[in-house]
Amino acid sequence: MWGQLINAWAWTETVLVVILGTPIVALVWLCTAPFDPGRYAAGRAFRLVGVTAMRLNGRWRFRVRGALADPRRPYVVIANHESYADVFLLSVFPWEMKWLSKDTMFRIPCMGWMMQMAGDIKLVRGDRDSTLNALVQCRDRLAKRASVMIFPEGTRSRDGNLLPFKDGAFRLAIESGSPILPIAIAGTRHAMAKGTFRFLRANAMAEVLEPIDTAGMTLADIPQLKALAKERIDAGRQKLAAELGITAAA
Image (cartoon, rainbow, N blue to C red; front, side, top):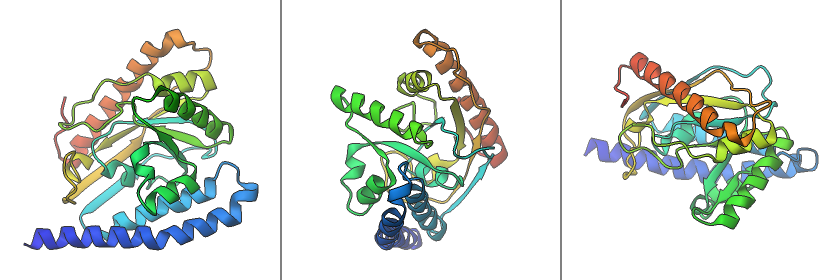
């Protein structure tokens, strides 16, 4: 019973924070749009809405580690994907990045509106035209000095094992000349596992890993680049899991 009450509170405060945050993000967007084509300010306001909801739910202790020398240098950011909670955790980083997200997220009232104002990128899975348009939008954000965040697994892992990495993020990085910024995540699988919408108690961490320069690479280098990025993220999440005292699947 107590757990159900806490979960009800977590959902209630999350919905309220999203509703109350929507006009704030809209105001930031209106005030900054004329001189902020990359929607950096509106994006940061939106991420802080998520961070606020996360801080208030009382179930999660989320921390991040690592910094960027220049937060306006555009990266293709990639991370392992364990649960919906990954979005809240990654929003704690104090710099903006645009998210490649499935189209269903944009249909959620308030949430979807803020995603549009933030300049996030819509993707309809299995639709070739949508995929091509999403890549165009990703290149646009990078050209406007905003990093782009992509989960290369494409979906959440149910058991913590890394799923195969798709080519899209690596093709984008090579074609745009942007470095890859790997981020390792551990602990969110216990916060909101795939297949459930319950808020569970969790201690999670995300860490920025060493960037991977793509200068001079061609599309023929995608397999090698993908393997290197996956190796770094896997090693990083195993290390974080050990620090947190949890088990990361091999």
